[in-house]
Every structure is written in C-alpha cells, then in structure tokens.
Length: 488
Image (cartoon, rainbow, N blue to C red; front, top):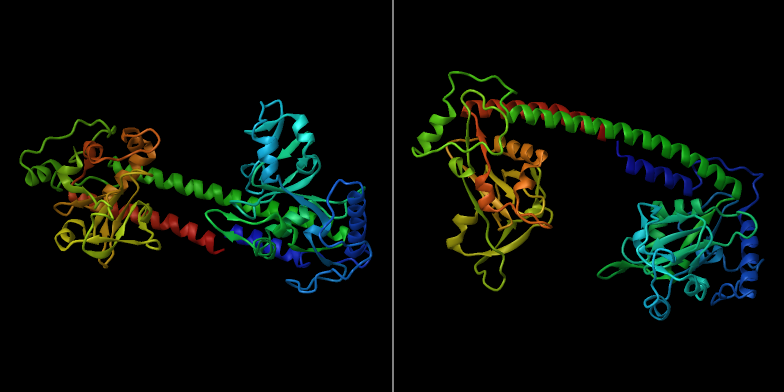
C-alpha cells in the first residue's frame, strides 16, 4: 500500500472540510479572526511587532481574499498567514552585527537553523549558541512561544512545531510563524502545519519559490500564503480525526516494514544457501569446476580461500575474476581530450542493484577505434567501482551503449552465468566483505587490483544454471508478495 499517498489524501480531505462533519453551533472562523486582529493591533501599539504595510483594523472585511484556491464549508474563512501570525526571520545585518562575532558555548541561547527542522519535526540538537544578552537585543527573532518553524532556503515545505520551554533564537535560513492567539487558542498551530503539508498548502507555500542553486522563498511570500480557517471546534475535531488516521497509517507502515524485513531476510538466506552450495543438490555427473577452469587455462591455480569462508561443496573450486572473465574499467571522461561521435554511456548512478535507471543518461565522445573496447554487450555485468562499491546489474539492452571508468565491465568466458556472480557480489556486499577490502576512508574504491584479488566460488556450469533458476523463482515469489502489498 502506498501509505504516502494515503497520508496525503487524509490531509487533503481535512483541509477541504471533508474529514469531519460541520457543526452549526460552532463559533464561525470570522469571529476568531477578529479576535486575532485585535490582538495584533494591541501588539503593534505596544511596539512588540511592526505594523503591516497595509493597515487592517478589526471589523474590516474588505481585505478578505476573493480569489481563493477552493471553496470552503460554511463557517470557514480564507485569510493570509500574515493576518493570523507574526512571521519573521533573522535579518542578514542582524547576523553580521550581532551573531557572527558573539557565538558562545552550549550554555548560551541555541540558534535554530534550517537543519533543525527535519521530516516535519524539530531537532533539538544545536551547533551554535549566543549569549542571553545578545538574544535580548533582538527580541523580534527570539523564539519564546509555541510557533511553527520552516526553512526558507533548501528544503522548502518542511514544517515543524516548536513547543518547548526555554530560551531559543532564530539562526540562518529558518523562519518563524507565531500564531497571534492572545489569551486563548483560536487557531491551532497543528492545523496550520496540516494545511501547509497538504497538496494545496504546499502549492500555495511554494508558488513564489525561487529556483536558484538552492530552492528558496522569501518571508514575504510566507506571509502572503492563503489558508482556510475552520471554526475552533472543527479544528479540534479535525486534529483528533487526523490523529486516529495517522495511527492507522503508521500501523500499516509497521506491518509492511515487518513484512519487508522478513522478505529481505528470506532473500539474504536464499543467497547464503546459493553461494555456499546448499540451495540445490550437487550432481556427480556434472563436470567439476577444476576441470573447467584448467580447460580454459592449463596454468590455473586455485585461490587461497581468504574471503570465501564456507567449506567448498563437491565439484566446486575457488578462483579470481580474471580466471573466469575479463574485467575492465570504462572510458575516462575528459571533455578536453575526448573526440569522436556523441554516444550514450552508463555511469555508477545508472546502475542499481539488478537493474538500470536510464532516465539520466548522458553522452560521451567515442572514436570509431574505441567502440569495440567500450561498447556493452548483452550479459555484461557492470559493477560500481566507487560510491556504493560492488553494486551491480547485468546489461541486457539492445541499444548502443557505452560505459565510463566508474564501472567495471565483467565479460564472462565459456558460458559462465553472470547472474550467479551478481548473486555472489550481492552476498559479499551483505556480509561487508566488499566494503572491508575496498580502499579509501571517506570514499571507497573497488579498484581493479582489489576486484581481481576477490575469491569467487565456481560451481560446475550446470549447477550454476540450476542455482540461478532456483534463486530467480524464489525471488519472484517473494517479490509478488511485495507487489500485492503495493497494489492494495
């Protein structure tokens, strides 16, 4: 089941007034707004917040938005976030003049940054602090009350609710939406967050998004966001109903996670049995792997069994990749030197486990003399040299395709089964073998030298085929369970 879509559907029903019934006895939302406007006027008089560019007095309904995203039920009302909240950020000059040179230790006032809002929640782990006296000089950007925090640079649309006692302050790239509720709660922060996370709310929030190096919106754009406000009683009922639905969705996700974990464990066990020669029975009439390997190369010498820890089944042998295949890195990307015809190529990003993502294909110049060396053929195994080292898939495409030097192309000899060695690499990856032997501390590299040193099991050819057939059959059964869950 696509629980993400289910969550979105629930939110969309809620903000359209279709999740719970309306109650004609509820105080209309227009009355709530008048109280909030009166509260705002009082705060302006006290100098606690700035007056808006266009003055809006209590009782004045001429500024209600006319061009709204959708119709709302009776008793609801459309307004702007600026009408119901104090929206602000830490100004650039404030950071330069007050913050940058006054950072202190963890005993100071913590600064909220964009990274403190993750997955719709506030992360109370801080890296920057300022003295309390500095924070008090910037009361507008203090965070003292319950409010919504949202990054306005980077992950636009990520909203969290701050509701923790103590002294906090806005840092860079995060804005504050503080509902002006006064002495009682007229508009719940949770409902505002619910709307902003809905399909219509996200569209409204990002309608003035700037597409630069990082997505961004202005604080003014946040103020101009239109939002439908239900009566307070209906807000409460919506939030209660949402809570029940979210609990239901989470129970589905937990069940799916358990099933997915079980399926992953089953696949891992199948690979374990396959690579150790315990998935299918050995057939004494099969040609032993040693004879096969020496027929290919009379000088063949078995490997030292450094990475393959299981006892070899009868008829199996250990070898290195060069004993059974030719493994070569692809063409180096060099715009200044590369010449020839533009051709599509695969890089590590295109290679997933057992599949390819061709949605982001790029091209490279290939000379005619280079084409035989770098062109892919069906049954070539492509293995990532960097990044997620060892991730691999088998090329079966019928189009003209080349590959670059972030990939090993493994072309097998004498009818060896590429699928079997894909399973071996996936098994080694799950055990941590590949990551352990790869060079590099921060960025690992599955170099040709390291790849060629890896011990690989060689079953008789017929047994390779029986193993591959059995693994595929069992995996199809397990995948069908996942597909049925996704379709439900």
